[in-house]
Image 1 (cartoon, rainbow, N blue to C red):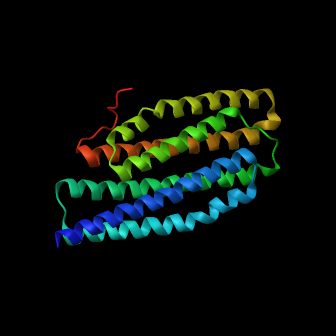
Image 2: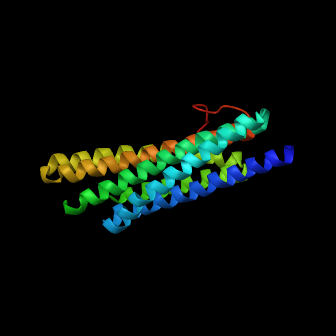
Image 3: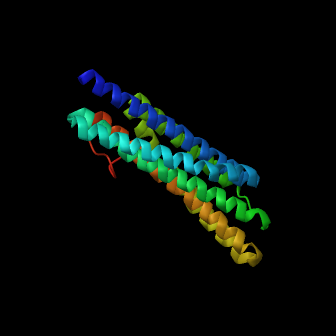
Length: 218
């Protein structure tokens, strides 16, 4: 009985990791689509939303079924709780990828405005997502902590882009529509970074049983 329970938990964890890789791919495609003004690639991200939503529902249903059937305790309960929370955060990250893709398509008819910090910010966010997922599947709390310590880097890119793009819009009103869309893209990247931090925090809680929100030493 106990072996069957842990087998179900392991399978659930693997399913969540697979969802994470789907979301990671969607984010990468969305960033590339934005940087390259590639509407076709952006459309692929939008079409992938349904798959992500289906995976989120399946994992949520299975997680709650396991909880109700087995009533896990201690470390197993922490794992199950983390899986359900991470599942929700991954779905939201997918939503932000779709937002970036939709904004990319809207920008097709606008004047070009691509700041080099978008590429840097996008790559930094993707590294965080990759490391957070790897920390989850390998139970690596040290890697999760390293993800949390990169939060200021993402916030710095977002703040810098807000300042620079706002200044460009003030100097050249014809860039206002483009600028607003770019600011929205930066905000979505920043939110993906925040949600990735949530995953890292859940990994630490899952592994060590301690809450680290707002307590990471920079």
